[in-house]
Length: 173
Length: 166
Ligand SMILES: [Zn+2]
Figure (cartoon, each protein chain N blue to C red):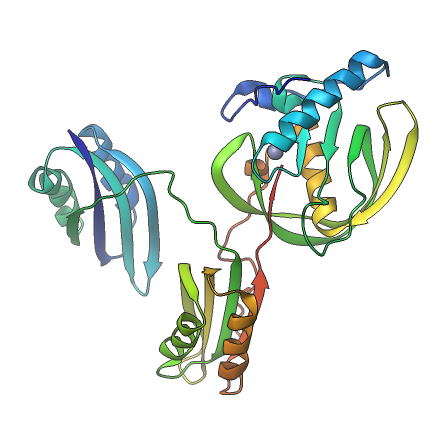
C-alpha cells in the first residue's frame, strides 16, 4: 500500500539535481506532493513529500543511487502525512537588521510566547562580510491575536531589530 | 432559487472569454439570484463570476460587507464591467472557489474606477479601493478566462529586493 514519506536531499549545488531526482522518482512510480527546494549557501536542499508503494528501504533504493551519483546525501522518513491539509497563515512578519548572533532565537522566542504558530519561515543574509544584514519572512497563525504579536515585536524592536507585521487578508472569490 | 455547480480548475471552460450581456430581463435576474445563492453558500466567498458556474456572460457579484473594518459598497451586481482608471499596485493574498485548497499572492491596482450596469440595465460608476477593488478585479479576470493562478507572484521577492552597494 502506498504511503507518504518525506525525502530530504542535501549536497553541493550543481545543475540537474531536481530533474534527475524527480525523473528517478517518476520512473519508479512515486508521486510528488508538497516540496521545498532551494539553494542555501553553496548547497542545494530538497524536502519533499513522496508517495511510494513500498517501505523506507525500497524508497532509498530508488533515490540513493541517483543522489550519490551527484554527491548528495539522502534521508527518508516515513510520515503520517496527507495532502490538502494546508493551514492558512493570517499574519506576515518581516524582520531585518544588522546580523548578529541570536537574532532568530530572540525574535521567534518572543513571537512564540505571544502565540505565533509559524507556518513558513525564510531567512537570508545580505549586505557584505563586513556588514551583514539579516532578513526574515515569517508567515504564521496568530493564535492569541494580532495585538499580542505586535507588543512582542515592539519589545524586540527596541533591541535594534526592525520588525513589521501585516495581517494577511485572504480574498476568496 | 437554486445553488449552481462551481467549475473547478483545471476545467478548460474556466479559460473561456465571456460575452457581453445584451438583454436585461427577468431571466437575467433569476440567474443572478442563483449565482448569488451559490456565492453565499461557499465558505468565505466574497464574490463570484458567471463563468465559474458555466455561464459565459459578463456578470459578476461582489459583496465584501462581511469583512470587518473595511470600506465597501455592499452587494454589487456587476454586468459588463469595465475598469476606466486604476492606480497603486499592491500585493494581496487570493483564493478562489474554482481553485480549492490553494491561495497565493497577486499584484493588482489598489484603487480602481469602474463602469458597469446593474441587473436592471442602469449604468453606474464606482470608485473603490483595497479589498473590494481586489475582489472586483479577481471577478473581472474570470470574465476574461483568467485565474489568480495566472497572476501569482513569487514569495521571495515580495518586499525586499537585493542590491549590492559598493
Ligand atoms: Zn475566483
